[in-house]
Figure 1: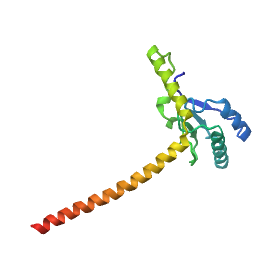
Figure 2: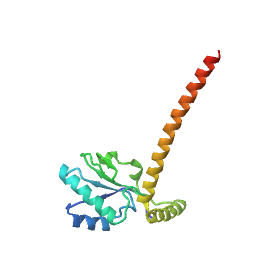
Figure 3: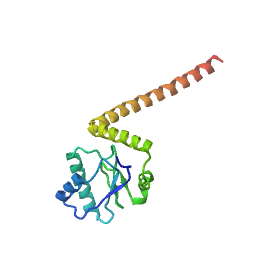
Figure 4: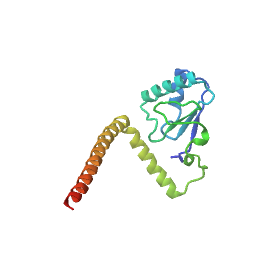
Length: 164
């Protein structure tokens, strides 16, 4: 497996058919990628992101796992993709120089490729929805116990004052 460094996905056209071929031919999900939409206007960017999200879902690729697909655009885009304003805002650890890995690093990269394959076989959307459901219930429980703790503390202080 290669060292995971950023791969830019170049767009010549923004038609859905062309996007399908680009997604199927690219290595989205296998390496970190970014799509530079800075030169498109707002309507074209929004339409492009909607079409891309639909195609990504059709190919059963998750936009964040195991490697993210970033949208680079000056226009704020709300979608399933991570969004940044410029290429300089992308995570720097994926921009490392490519050098020949040592034997130990090759072993780690082989293990990493197995982990990536395992992650791709998971039902990521289902797992993330379960995490969201559990975090909501845990947050609710935390807020209720926090309020209960406050009331118990207040009660103990008032009880101590009444004893004096």
